[in-house]
Image 1 (cartoon, rainbow, N blue to C red):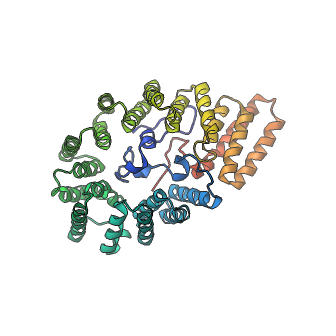
Image 2: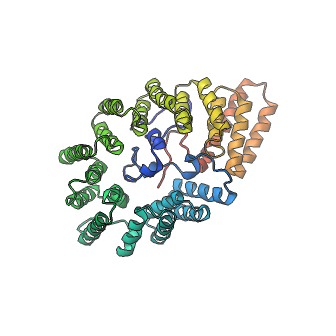
Image 3: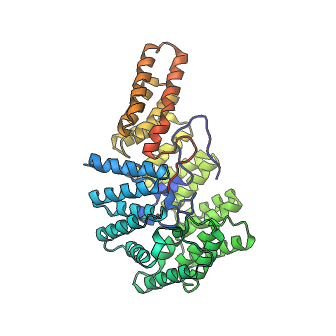
Length: 436
């Protein structure tokens, strides 16, 4: 997808981030290999930046969540998984335990994955996924430590076939297992081998929409440079939607397949899907992001504004509208919304301050910008940068009559944003934030 560029470097929506932000946490389980789509848990926003601030959040818990987020961004999945596991133990929160499990699996940290999955299962006894993870790790030897090798690995195929069969008999069916299947192969380089394996594993389940979804997703992950695979991906996505009409996840996957051929046709498809399902937030978010990708900001705002008008209590929707207002350079409206979000304590401390800092800097209100940057830095505990920011503030105060140095002060303050963002997990420079 094209990278959004503009003169102002506001914290931007990561490709597909609008859709991700609007998907319920429970539906973010498609595949880490689907790296630039609303279906990807790899784009699942860090816990420390995606939720409203938790009342009574202890400093220790906040630190562990932030440590996990920063470790993810730096590619240290072992540290990230351990930090999330410790946070889950302290908070006794199944969502955090799930996150720890997923990161440990992607990072091939077998021991942590087992601990986290057991904790997740204890905190949420109704969840089937943690039991599957524990069973797979127990049965698979090095299954949780090394990336699965699909080249002629009949034993791996047998293990996965047995896992699917056990899931089918467990009462909850194979749906969740197929939705998780591609995630096992995020580290596998031979995506075509993965596609062939998943296609074979799905053969015994022709009536499962999730099985067809898994095949289509695996095909998409190959890059679809072969016409036969591209055709199969479309056919499988269509079959999934035939078996489960109106399925948001299936619709989003099909839009990605269409977008590979033509972004314009993907927009048309999502428009039609939204007419059929006008209350679908994931589809609306995906359409809005498509509009943002081609700089049709007014259309994007109209989509999100309509959803927000139907649910004014949703701060996530308000935040999406504020983001688009920033991209449109409608600074007055963006500031109004951001101030409202800040007064409602939306997001972790410092997140909204960062947006307001850059907005006030762009509108040349440098005293306010400096104060907002200071708030960001103090909340992210970047001691060295706090000192630097104070020096900038003091220097600016002695030069406030010089218009050129106003600009220099703003640029100097902006320079510290990168470090703050690494702690907040926000993409501000248009380069994307790496996540495990």
